[in-house]
Length: 213
Image (tube, rainbow, N blue to C red):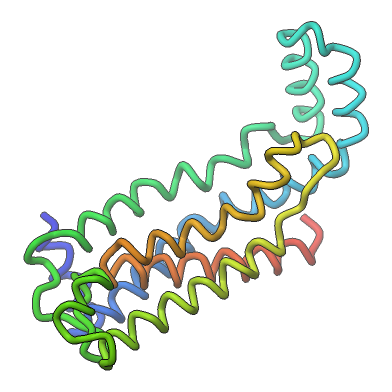
């Protein structure tokens, strides 16, 4: 199944596996766009309702069941749900798992590279095979640097609210950098997927945040 999928994507992209991964990632992001628009709308609703939510939390802090009902009712009046924000993340999981399976498949990406860097190898394997100073390693480091830059932009988009626990305030700005760690241990194919996907996500959030929803 994995081999058939890779063959199809490569054929569609004119024989270039790296381009096929980019096109596959863009197709996934377009497919999930309606969910992300809904998530952005939910975020703005949550920001607008923040004072009322804090009042409810203070009023029903000893009655979690009643608090949950009141919060759900408040969101329902806005035509939204407090759980709408997690839908895009859940919807992405099958595609991320599929790309992981492709990237780590022993034969699917054999013979395919990006400017000489094998798509199916990790950075450690590329260094071992080509040496630290080589074009394939430079390609890998460039992808890592771009993912780090996108992670930095993503961290700047995170909004910290007063009601969040202190621990979460410290952890949340660091979460986007998890993609950098992932690229360091995953094959190049997965790194390309993460780069394109996170770059799209950052751009998408910037656009959606600047327009009324």
